[in-house]
Each structure stands twice: as structure tokens, then as C-alpha cells.
Image (cartoon, rainbow over all chains, first blue to last red; front, side, top):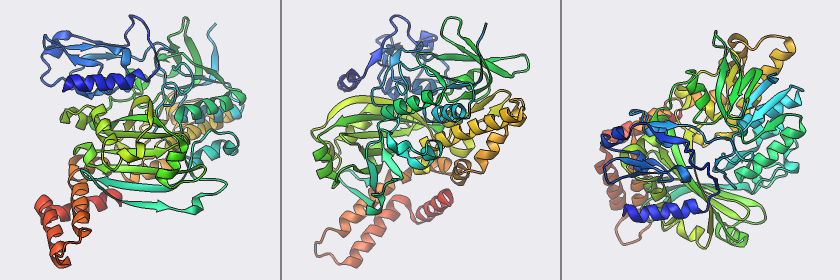
Length: 99
Length: 433
């Protein structure tokens, strides 16, 4: 089921224009261990671009290429404070044609 | 030598644009910084644009502003599983030379607004992320730091129009973090389609438009709403719920959007359309009680960064433009009087807001966010009950009407209890009084 949904959101993101800042992700997970001990991991379903996925080790892996820069992950992880969130460098990231 | 301006505006959304344009028109030396590749690249709106506030800033905007359709019909739908019950208001009187509401494609408006800003004499620089406020030992803001090399710029005052996340004020400790129950996450798609089909499906001619605001089963009991708007050659469809509810419900936002697009009453309206962009954005929903500090020594906050959004009426961009204009007017008045940009002097901005629809409306609905948050039946149970009642009443099956009325009443009492119904009526009245 989750696999099917992942494919769907990728189809959506495929329509968008991104200017990717290679190897300079604007969001980082502070401590991987904190994700493993997070009982709910709300970032894995709240992110509208599905940037966060639960990995086999029970942690969370993050791929920021499809990020829509909404800031929701920052808000849902506020209680744990385990997400380091910056805007991308000027000119990089999502570039909406219509918005 | 660090450059110095009268004012720096951070962000090129509706509030930042209104502030920059107003300052430039008054002859102020103003710099606007935008992190996107071009103005609008980072902005998302449903979108409906309200003419009144833009008209105050740019009276002749209708000459060349790239709006989509002027709205002649407003529908409000409560969705059941396979039905809707709702209200429509449509009037030919909305077909005027100066319409009040337009559907828009946000990036088009932002590009247009920015051209007007540059013509008014402001300096606008894109592809530049402001990373922090520059503050002296007393805490007074005297400029910003950007991610460009040697990126310090000074100004008498900084207008923070950096949107709902408002990282600048948070990092400086001027604003608190956003509480999950005070923001909604909305996702939307733009769907391109033959304009003839739009006209047929919505009963429109020329540039007439319809907007539909939607509540009900599609938010899966979460506090939220959905929408479907008609543009010239496209439709925008979206759905948003409180972040606190998403966090609790375990539902992915794009799953909600897919379900909305596949709902039996929505699907025929969008059939055959081609999706060209998928967007997500947070919306301030905390209302009056969540409005942060608005001014300090050398700074003001406007628009989403100041939490100016009227959730009850789905208004945001007009509050943003009004606040941007009032911030600019405050700065202009102080500058002309030769007075410094201190917290005490800039407080005139707050007084202007208090005297305007911005704060008056936010204050009127100050209890609404808490009441909705604590009473999710308004988003789940009631739309369902009303759809059931309509279905019962409009199914003619030889059951007498009195029995039908009793069945409907029983369905309400069963779901909410008699006192629950009375309580809900009082709560709603209190929220909207």
C-alpha cells in the first residue's frame, strides 16, 4: 500500500521544476538514533513530497530533492527537535511555474 | 562599504510586494530580496484574489493584471461519501467593469506585480536567501545577512514578509515556533483543460468563473477544507487540514488529494484534465490569539509572517496586502517626520491594523480555531448527517413525511445526543458571533 502511494506522489513531483543544489541538502536529520527511538515518526506520512521514509533499521531516511519547502516536517518534529531546517540557497529548490 | 537603504523588504509575496511598491512610490530607497529564481517561484495560493486591497495600492491594476476569471458564483459544498449538499450564490451583478473577486494563477500575478515594483523605482534582487537579521547590542535590527558573498546589507528598517515559516523572526527569538494546531498544510494541483469544457461543466461564458469551497468526508474527520476553482484554461483543486490533525491521523496529504479527485461528485468536473504542477504550502490558522509581536526596534512583520489569515472566510492575500501597505505607510510617515524607526514609533503600524478589517475580523473570529479544533464533528459528523437527511427527504418511497422527519431527527440525536446538538449550536453561534 505504502509502495503504491510512493509511486503516486512521485508522479506528482515529476511535473514540478526543481533546481537541485547537488550534495547540499537544505534539511538534515540531527541524530539518526533519535528517529529510531521516535515511536510515531509523523514525518514519514505528513510530508507532502514523501521526502522521509522509514528505513529497514527502524530509522528515518531523508531525500530532499522533491521538497516543496512547506515547513511541515519542521512543525511536526518540533517536540523532538530532530530536524535541522533551512531554506535552500538563493535560486535553488522548488521553482513553481504556476504556484 | 556596506550598502544602506531606507528599508529592506524580505520576500516577494503579496505583503512584501504591497510594502515595497508603496515605499517606492513614496520615493523611498527600498531593496526587496527574494530567495526564488524569479518572483513567485516559492509562492503558493489557491487562489482567489480580492480586488479591493490591490486597488488601494494600484488603482489601475485591471489594465494589465493577468487575472484568470472574475467570480460570478460561489458554491459551498458539504461532501458525503457519494454526494454533496450545499449552497450556491450566483449573480449576473458580478459581471461588472470592476469585479470584486478573481481566480488567479499566483506566479503570473507575482511577475506582474514585480514589474510594477521595478517601474516604481525599487531595487528587487532574486535568488538571494536572507539568512539572519543583523542586530546591535541593544537588539535593534539594522539590516540583514544574505547567502551571497559579502552579503550584509543595512537599512533603517526591515520589513519581514518572509511567509508562514517566518524563520527570520524565530531565529532571532522575536517570534515563537508555530504550534501544529495553528497551521494547516494544504496541497493542490493545477489541471489544464479545454476552456470550452470549463464553460460547459460550470455553466459559464467568456471570463466568468465559479469557485467551490468544500468540507466533509474528504478530510477524514480532520479540521480542514478543500476547494475547486475555475481558471481560464485550467482548474485548481486542493485540500488542507491542520498539521496537528495530520500528525495524529496518520494520513498522507497526497492521499487526501487523490481521494478528493476521485470523489463521485468531483471526478466528472475534472475529467480529461492534465496535471501540470503539484504544490504544498502551510497556512496560518491560529487567528487573533496566534498573532505574534508585530514590531520592534528597526523591524515590522507583515502577511503570513504575522499570521494574518482569516480562516473563517478563506481570506489571506488581502490581509497580506493591507498589512504590507500599512507597514509601508507607517515607515513613510516616520521618515517624513524625521523620526527614528524605534519600537515605540513603529507601534503606529499596530494601531492602523487595529482600526482596519485585518484585526477587526481576526478579533471577531478569535475563538473559532479553538472551537473547531476541539469539535471535529463540524467537519465529519455534520456533513454526513446533512447528506443523509437530504437523501432521506428526497427519496420518494411512500413513507410519510412525519416519519421521515422523525428518522432524520433520530439520526442526529443518535450521533450527537440532544445535549450535544444544543451544545454544538451554541458553540457555532459563539464562534461566528
